Image 1: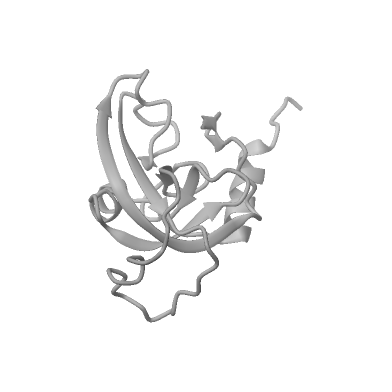
Image 2: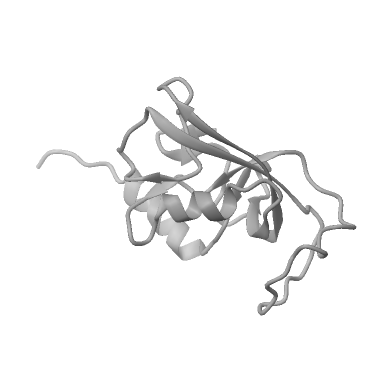
Length: 150
């Protein structure tokens, strides 16, 4: 899943828009349970408490109208994917006000919730709620920079 804060097998240029349905949420405690989190405020914060949110999504090419707010009937006839993990972004963490995990967990952590999302074409076990290629690529390149001595 996540290695050093990054999602293994996820290429930031290969995320596809679709609709997700939350299947379950787990509130976990313990370092062995929390190697990853759907949302973590502070990328070096507490590893002993975490929330895992799992979703299914539509793998077919679909177009979601920009002003659409009611998705309840939209997915009824579409075949759903296998279960995947939902992340707030490619790293699964961030800092307020950009990342507020209490809001994220309340909105997406309810089983049956339907919402727009993006899945990874290369790793279909990874799903994000929003996606901007430049933001995600910048985030990865920033954290991959090697810092060394002068």
